[in-house]
Length: 486
Image (cartoon, rainbow, N blue to C red):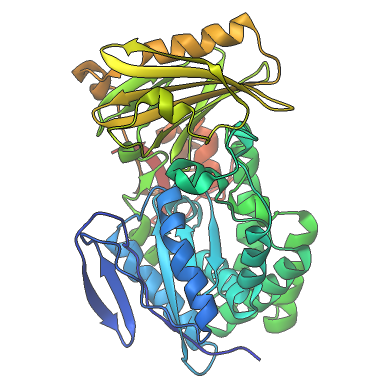
């Protein structure tokens, strides 16, 4: 039997911003920005679950770029989740739903009623019923206690960032960035996923949403996964733990038919959805930095660096990750290092597994203090370099299966490229946003797709974001999503 739920929507919980709260409806609150991380109003009825969720929530928020604030999207989430929870009888449990400032297509749950959706998943969905399907699935995980089981498993399993596997030492708790590298949302079991699919479809349908939206959105996410298959970081998105297989899509269709019959019942609310997601940020957030070819520019912290031409860069959960076709990789991130600690001492402080202390050297780069060292594990060789810039410490961690002079030169040239950003660098940074356009009487999917031709891969991206195919007709007067410069 489904426990009845109650929602407290905390859409903005970002560290180091200002705080107040407003109520949009009975028992539905939205926390806005504050000077401190205000604890969400969450009461799952299980004190241990609440403790786990409260402990992990700040780490999740930090590792996914903070909270994304968009009032229309927040209001829509309140309305959707309120309906989903009302579909389950007695309102005894509070949920906290957070929009994460990440381009990844992702949604997940933690014990204590914490539900997360990224702005990337908001950009991909095409109506409220598709978003409701995702939210209902995650609510089902929490109601069925799957999130508790997963967290217990993570607690006893060491999960290391795939790009720098083995580089961190035995005590990562002393280093903020290594904590982020080990933060992972491991996949639920297949049985748990199928159970959440079934329960989520039931919840969404009882709430009045199109129950066939789950199968439709799973198919859309499968197309998006293929489109982004070449990205440097595809290890922790929604599809890695929610695989969009034909069998799973078929089972979702069968559940919807068994519970509610053939398609045609339930609301989709496409027009309202398009209005709510118009103007949300698409892709990388400028506040997290921007990738321009082989160059990374941080417009807020005002620094830049470049990687060798054989590297492809990607922003990944608080870090910049680069992968080379010849089996090399680099991770760039920051670390909290006391101003009184010398960089050489920091390198030797134990956070790097296999560091050879005799290789540590210090120097200057563009007037900034630097330190470098060499480390090795059973499978990887590392060139680790740190630089102190504007009272912050940044780390380059290069990894390769085989150490070589070419590998060493690539690491050295990257560190040498690190410098303060110029106005010319900053002018290169541009952000993209989701826009909506109204289809005219003579428009087609192809004519609308051409509006995104100036974006790399933009034409194909248009079809995927709108769940269309080349040659498809469009509905005159209906809104469709395009991505353009903000």
